[in-house]
Image 1: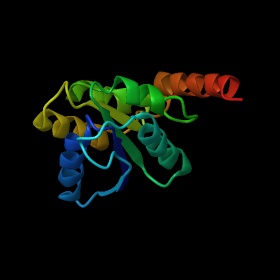
Image 2: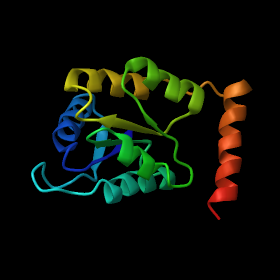
Image 3: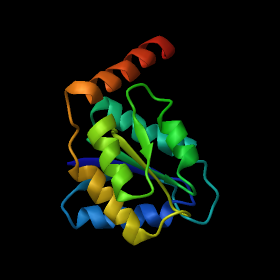
Length: 151
């Protein structure tokens, strides 16, 4: 499995911790994050880079991190084919995958601690999409909206 991971300066430390956590599970990470956690860096190019890797198939999933997770999730969701989900607990992460087929996980570094972040990441990556039925129909509806709005 390959994960594209990106953050602004606020998410820099949590991004490094998550990349290390994933590395210990033999999961490869492609880092698109800010060069350090000191100098201000916009989340926009990093969220876009992660989203582009996921849509191109260069990464299986993406993880994006900023202070709250809000801005970087909004950025990732501007890319066609991305279903970025801002999750603050394991249940949300499981449901984002199971019901919405989310392909990018967004986290807020100033909202959750590292132990909870690891649990959320693990839940997100372990949960399969419940394909077929009402969940697939709703994801298909999202795809139709993208076709209309991303011309």
